[in-house]
Image (cartoon, rainbow, N blue to C red):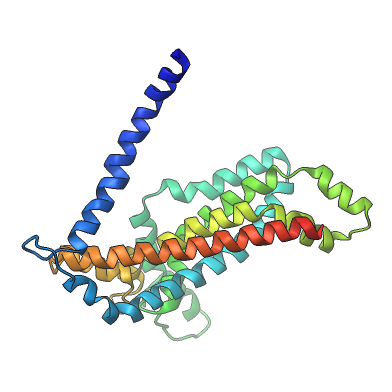
Length: 275
């Protein structure tokens, strides 16, 4: 009885936290999405969503491209890191986390000085007689900013799973005649799927909803859904449309995450049977 009471008491802070910072904001978003400026029920904001479908599509495309790039950069690094000596692992993990200790805005703003017309990159290229190239305001600059800012969120979950991998499974696969490629395909990769899915989620969600990266590295020429939402709240003072767009974005992200988790679950089960 005392244990049950203690357990209930320990749960209370988490319940309060969930209500204040999860349920209450969601309720406010739903309220504004389905009302007008007078507070009366209205579907006017929802009816405007189709005119922003192209922006939603572009946001998902940019987020998907950045996530794929992060994955292909992160997985080999995380795999090599998991095989390194323990002291080297600690040092490399600290170096991966080091940029995260710096303010997100400063990290993004620093790329403006690198990619600008008179930035460091163009100055370097001018040494070889290359004329000034426009980097800012291009899709490449925006995706680069996404990859740079969110790459650690892909590396760390994959590394965490790979570093805890049971080496006896790898040895068993080798004893059964598997070469290195087969060991990776049948053992290492299927067992690392939880880390991959966690990393994909942690990178894809902020990439789709970002707005500061596009404002600075997109130079105001690229508008993603995060920019539209921020504009509705900060400039247009249209909380209703901003909330409606936020609600649709949240639903789309949940659908994408659900599909990825379902795919990952199927692959993991299939891989286990295949082994």
